[in-house]
Length: 324
Ligand SMILES: [Mn+2]
Image 1 (cartoon, rainbow, N blue to C red):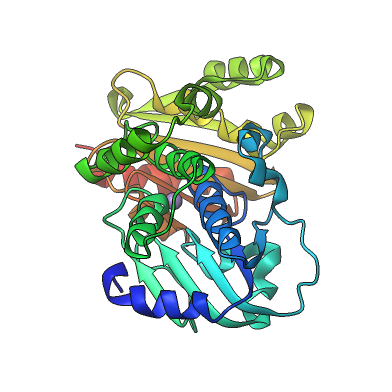
Image 2 (image 1 turned 30 degrees about the vertical axis):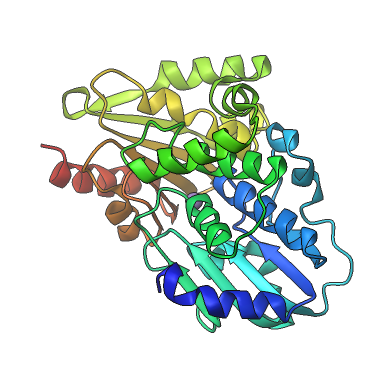
């Protein structure tokens, strides 16, 4: 449903709840963390008791937002009046917090993924026309006449910047810039800190891994497709967590002439994390769906169990169909 038609119901559910849980997806990204924080800040300002969840590690790079330290620090999780689910895309992505829906009287889901998979929500807002869930939350705050503080503005800016690759991806719209314009007009958001931490900073201890990825990178279709594979021995040798692996994507995607990329990480024997990126109209969400994964047109992922050889064969055949 669209936000506009659900606003009254959302308002009502929030007004009637005291003890509220806000949850995002596992391995939360900037959009997820940002909108969970903005929502929690606002609910607390209304006197609600809020617990904030996202399975997995919260990257320290987000600690310029105080509330990023409050994820998964919860008291009693036996019962919530209301569960607000943000940026999830699929109920599977609750990870360890898949216990939460059963503990809440009411559930609101707000998402910008295509057809979020979540049954039994009292309200489900899905608006894939938005680049980030942060933009939907900003709009919701407008409808609800919520007072946006600097902390909320910082969190929403983080959401929007992160899901648009710092306003670089084709999902960025005039509305995206409009929201940021309004946020920046009213608040002194430290955009330099936010953008450096999210888009520029790298850990010097990661240089050997970066060098490894660059050295091993392969290209196909005349250089249009870049392929990087991080084998299990590399993951183990450098003790790579989700975040340090994630930071390596750009080396596969940013080459001149590259329009699509495959980044494969071998997480365990015969188990692979597959990340796909593309520019423009090439839809990598469809390719990820072939592997039972999902995501957005230009950024998607899946988990594959089997042999690397077979995985590459499937992917190359799929990319052959979409690369001109
Ligand atoms: Mn998102």
